[in-house]
Image (cartoon, helix red, strand yellow):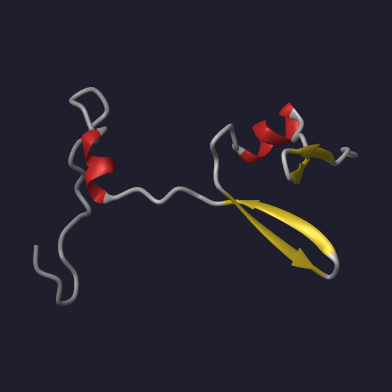
Length: 79
């Protein structure tokens, strides 16, 4: 896919087509790494890291998993 570099203030910018944003799950405000590899500009999305607190706050009674049985103990594990 081709894109055109355009002036944006004192910098240069490129528009990322919607199809690429969908495939890479980036949106306005997403952080990306910009690198040069073998003379090419490489843009890579930075995957957001969630804290345990952020993950736990989204658990509700509707989406919590039930307890499962993994069978009797074997070896030295203690439950």
